[in-house]
Length: 300
Image 1 (spheres, rainbow, N blue to C red):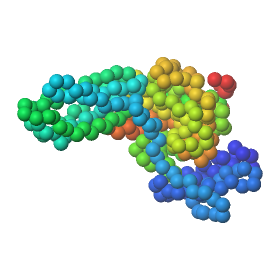
Image 2 (image 1 turned 90 degrees about the horizontal axis):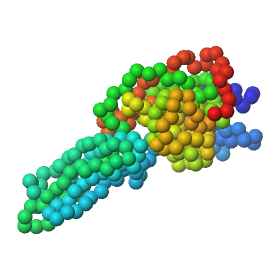
Image 3 (image 1 turned 45 degrees about the vertical axis):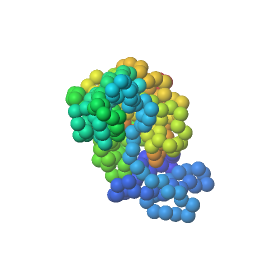
Image 4 (image 1 turned 180 degrees about the vertical axis):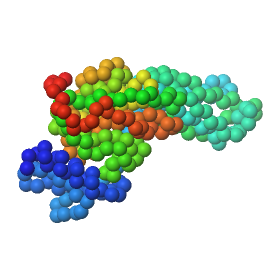
């Protein structure tokens, strides 16, 4: 059986047979290097546990900082990302605070590549100010509302087959990926922007499964606050940079098989901040998948 047919059969069987969330699969490689997956163990098989944290880390790029001044302390946030961040600061365990020692909660949106003061606390006369702080954040501005948009295919070539759609039982069961679509395609297929926007996050150096379930990816912020994410890309193929404005149809990368991927495919999802949670939202392509061939295939 040709390799492409084996891939499509494998993806179809996995999508159809998996019935539990976050289940464990078993990965085997035969003498010819062909990889297969099953929900039943076999000699020599290695566990392959599916999980859904398809959300990139932003450690160190969104930071709560404090600035003491005579008689108190000021709290501010530095956002080094090219996307607004919703933040929450909780100040509790206050002692000797002017205005009382009740916990204080501040919520705000910090713009891209900017710094914003969240709060100041003054010390009451008679002793030092004491406090504890807790800080959390989520990518995107929850105030923005998504607009109707039908997405052109984010690739060149085909036709390709949808191997897992919205609410798929294999891995599209959590809030971040519930409405994602997986499209099986050969590694190296040109991936293009399905909507104009600003590139806010990329990964380009992951090999194979790596440490990030998303593998190599590109995240694009659209004008309405939604974000399109292109996952499992080929290592070294991403040709855009963070902060770059991209247009509809612009080359982004090439498809791959990196991260938590069971075969070469593109995982495409649209997300928005729904209030301290980045979740996938329903979307539609502007034509059926698997229709007439797309003769625009070529180098990006």
